[in-house]
Image (cartoon, rainbow, N blue to C red; front, side):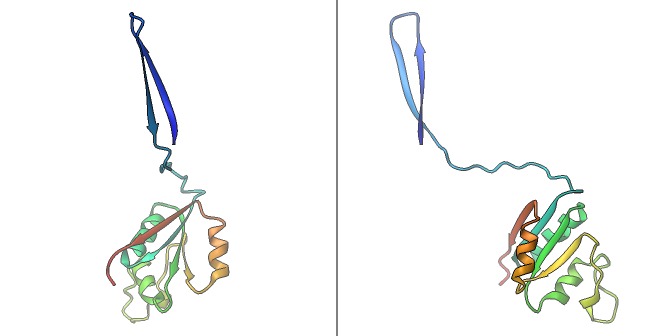
Length: 129
């Protein structure tokens, strides 16, 4: 903490001086990112993280989502443009928006590459498990 001193002088000869402790805690500053150049990474647990990824993609951001092992069919059906309901119960081929990609959670090299290019990281967790 860095002390801040303020001084008050009146018309008389009295001077009042106070020292305040100002917090230097980090603060969050939000600023918009241009969707045409911004890349958003999404990680989390539960359906809220899938929703966050879909909303980022719908807003125009290049978006990647870390997909948990064995969950790709479910995630694809939730993220697909048509809801993944094509009647064949095979959602592994459900079409994703062009600006949305899935990254296998076990592929650390791909995750490192994606992290190196992202403008924002969304961490979304719900308490479903």
